[in-house]
Length: 124
Image (tube, rainbow, N blue to C red):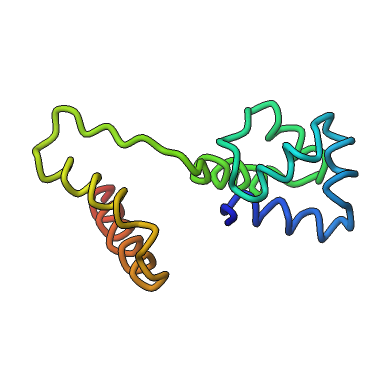
């Protein structure tokens, strides 16, 4: 298992030609922590850590923003607060939580597309 943030960090490491161990030492974290982040076994890293990653790879501002965004959407354990919403919102959140592991990738992509369209039309 991995996360969007994990994929991005692995890609940056490959471009720079550094191992997890080398990167971990440079960022003053354990290789185990870095591995857990890359493989989606840790929650969102701190802002300080994200800044150190951006500095380590010397990424430009736009790339750093994207890295921070990927970290925000990569927490493998999330909570959905439906308190105060209509019952169908709570039912949908619970159904998704129960079924997500068994949904095929195409279904996930379609659901993400539906959500993206809904959010874009709401923002207009």
